[in-house]
Amino acid sequence: MTSPRHSRRGLVIPFAIFGLLLAVWTGWWFWLADQVETRLAVQTESLSEAGWQVAHEPVSVTGWPFRVRVAFPAANVVAPSGHGVAASELVAEANAWNPGHWMLIAPDGLVLTRPGKGQMAVEGEALRLSVSHLRDRFPDLRVELVQPTFTPVAGAEPFPLASAERVELYTRPHLTDGQAATDEMDVLFRLTEGRGRAGGPVEGATRQGRLSAEVELTIEQASRLRGVDSAGVFANWTAGGGRFTAVKGRLQAGESSARIASEALRARADGRLEGRISLTAERPGEAIAGLAGSRSGAVNRVGAAGAAAAAGVQGDRPVDLVLLFRDGRTWLGPFALAPAPRLF
Image 1 (cartoon, rainbow, N blue to C red):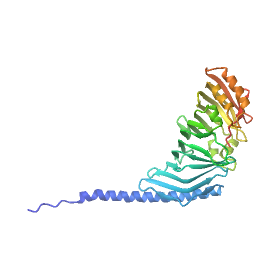
Image 2: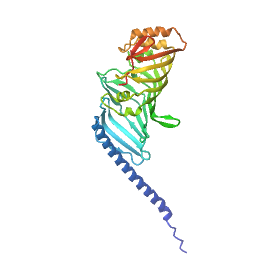
Image 3: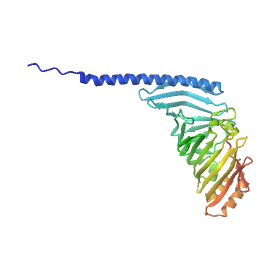
Image 4: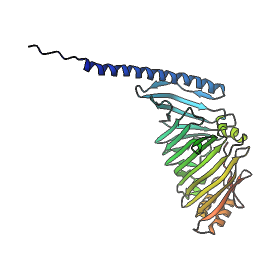
């Protein structure tokens, strides 16, 4: 008797379905890659019309099937303000199923251009920037530098830090009762185990130790940070009445530490901060004395020595202090320590 023949349809159908899904997914991936290239060209043209300088060698888009990877060889981007970034290669990546979340990586380091201060090379174990929620008014932004080193290019102005274990910056829309505020953005900055350059103010304040900081704040009038003109992004924001509010954080400089808080800080027309910061400090005299002994020309060594002597009277007890940014200077009580921090 001849045995019955079994239908092979049950074997063919799964492969057919898989092939169909693969074809659809491949079509989606190539459409997405084409959209990325098209939008890059449009954005580059728009930036050039706004005064930016954007240069790179031919872009390549790879990563099929699960990623979209865009490589920019010999990238060089300069804003109208003169701030710029250059890299032998920049790489942007996103999952093909989530093209609204991108990671930008500089695998071989960066060279940053600081107007009036020269260029600085930044290298590290990882230098990355993550952007998500691109359709929101203020996308979520994350900058992470893992074990970075900061080396001024010949002839450039020194940078306060020589290296760090980690530098992080996070931004997101400010939430009020669970809803995004109209024009406010939250910022978190974290510096872990920063090491100052030789003879600089950070090395002096930490007594050749490490500087760590964690600062949170809210930026008002955040939409004005989008305009980058010849004066820089913060100039437009300052002119529109922008402020830093709800400032709080903690600093650790060698053996000295402090908790900081400020209701509001703003910038003057020349970019220097104005306002007051309250500090609850432990052993502040050591940090201030170290600052007075630094070889940095920006530090008022006489004023720092006077402030260190006054703070030293407290010994090891916590002490409440007020750091005042006024008239372009940083004051601790009656003592002028240094120029106020400058945003632009």
